[in-house]
Length: 208
Image (cartoon, rainbow, N blue to C red; front, side, top):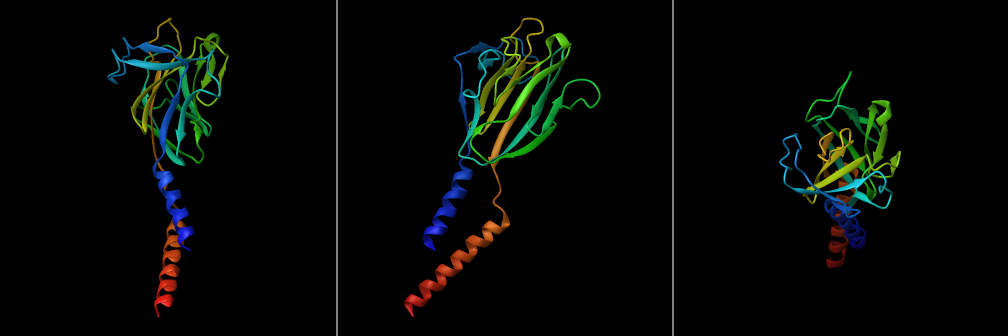
């Protein structure tokens, strides 16, 4: 009984320990003209261009499961861009249904590994494409890039650069990603309480 309770306690602790890790490609950029008010100008960020993006690099979660919250921070771009998650489009910057700044979307990531999200362009068609944090890019072009800037162990800025005008200001679309523990279901707490009760009964029997 005590062993089972210890295992469950360790599982809860592991969930609480979820944090980000980043594997890069030795690509960095000093930000000079980011117009989104994130305080990044003058700072160095990591980035991965589309020709180097793969399933072996990017932003990952370790010590999960984790609740992942995406917050849309805006854009400064002529192109029509979007960010997406495995569950479908999260945010778009233009047109019908364009996202509002500070809109959020939340998903649960139950296993460790690369966070499932992407950035892409739909208009103009000559620039259409998508770059995935959890995969490669289509097309695998250096014209696309995702910038990464750590805020804390559980928060990151992720920044899209679509190279529409040949710049590297990483403000064509931006999100903040935050992770938190996945709440343990009520049944889990009931199970822990039951195990604790049984252990207490066993101790009382031994002492009588």
